[in-house]
Length: 208
Ligand SMILES: O=P(O)(O)OC[C@H]1O[C@H](OP(=O)(O)OP(=O)(O)O)[C@H](O)[C@@H]1O
Ligand SMILES: O=c1cc[nH]c(=O)[nH]1
Ligand SMILES: [Mg+2]
Image (cartoon, rainbow, N blue to C red):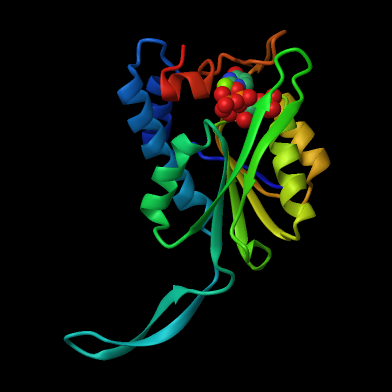
């Protein structure tokens, strides 16, 4: 599995303010959305194109358009939804699926409470989005669930990962490329990413 950390200075600048505990809910949302657009740009870098005929006001020519499988974004609820709008800004025609997972605070195992994806998802390139890759258990469960319903082309996009989470996803899903903005130092004893940004869902929706 390939791991791509997007080290663009603009993105890293925004990520610093996402991390800061002084960042307000509205700025947190805006920054995550902006970073998600940048990650969407990177994760679609290898999409195939085909040449079509176009007539400009000056001349006829052939120019590229996206070809190949259509896209589907899948958000891991709740926090994944904070990245969806930024991804859709760049990919306005993409279909969207949702997988509801929460992490049991004792076992750190994901519990599924919702699953709704487009009927033709098997025919699409599926990009799974979740800001946090901590133990990796949630992402691994989401990717497994999508494979169970027949999806064969998958990518995973996160904001922050831990070394442990990256390793776990690589081991469980070696076929799924991972794009993220940073891999942090470690997990703490509660399974939180250090230094991380805290609880992404709570910061996104102001629930704590
Ligand atoms: O890699 P893991 O150890 O599985 O942790 C990461 C998961 O934890 C967070 O979700 P959470 O369970 O807090 O749900 P929420 O988005 O509803 O807050 C986050 O958005 C990931 O889905
Ligand atoms: O650091 C973490 C780990 C899991 N979920 C979060 O939202 N943050
Ligand atoms: Mg949470």
